[in-house]
Amino acid sequence: MQKVLAQAGVASRRACEEMIGDGRVTVNGQVVRRFGAKVDPATQVIHVDGKRIPTAPDLVYYALNKPIGVVSTMSDPQGRPCLADYVEELAPRLFHVGRLDTETEGLLLLTNDGELANRLTHPSYGVQKKYWAKVPGPIPRDLGRRLRQGVELEDGLVKVDSFTIVQEHGQQALVEVVLHEGRKHVVRRLLEESGHRVIDLARIEFGPVKLGRTKPGTVRALTLKEVGELYAAVKL
Image 1 (cartoon, rainbow, N blue to C red):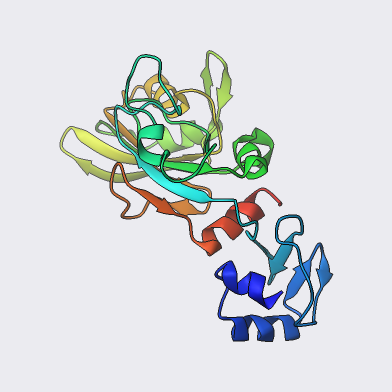
Image 2: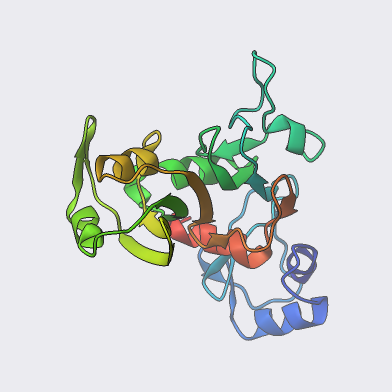
């Protein structure tokens, strides 16, 4: 057990032994206190302090800052830049979690963990995404209230979880939109319907994962903490 935890990056083997002794580790929902307990990381679910630990050796989790002009597919018959150009060397059969339209940049998650990918994109789990949009200003003070109450689009009502004016400068404004919708072009359509054409759009957070300082076109592996928080967000 302590070897599996250490290999997953939880802590040193000695520290993992202490966690086991303190009753902080469960396997398939049962507390394990024996240091030498056998565990199969490919089939058994391990939690430390209530958070699931990704232990299956073949599962990988990445964050990509998708640049503008890149198609959110693993191949493109028209020969446009696509996700495979950035990740094909990393692992076979990666899924992209949701998508960003070609003219939107920002955070895209990629994994070969099919169950996690499906749950993250399923509307019933309500995983929030945060976007920054550059729009023409000025922004009316009641816009946030209107967006939270809901805007009727051609495919139904859309409500944001939150709306913030990040910055206003001259005839442009930077606004932050948080919602758990996954409909196509939903942020652009929502703001346009409200009278604010989107000039630039970027996703900066997906659930607990933040884009941070990841440069456009760069891929990074998610941390153990981020993967555990993604599991928790979709009740895995």
